Length: 115
Image 1 (cartoon, rainbow, N blue to C red):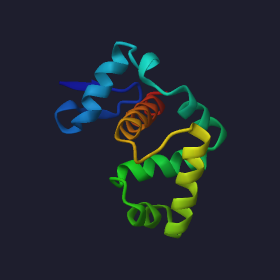
Image 2 (image 1 turned 60 degrees about the vertical axis):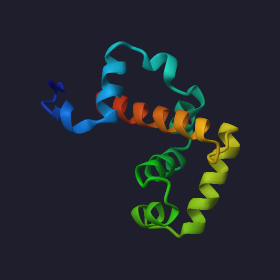
Image 3 (image 1 turned 90 degrees about the vertical axis):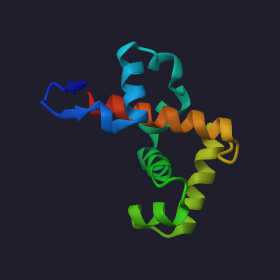
């Protein structure tokens, strides 16, 4: 199954794994119920913090890898993650909150790619 974006970007559903499920949810407009409003607000008001969080998730929660990708010191990543936790009133060591935020972050990134 394939999806063509308006600008002719080609996505192969078989290779996307979790993103495949998220794309199907987007097509049913379920994102309106699953996206964290506070995360969307963070994305708009503090794009550097949102980028840090998205990179942290794509780096499998590894601080050193996140720091390397963003070309900053690992202590900077710790500081930003604590700031994100404070702003969003969450705890990234809580599995449920981590999962929900990761899911919301992936959906926000997918929505952006289709704008």
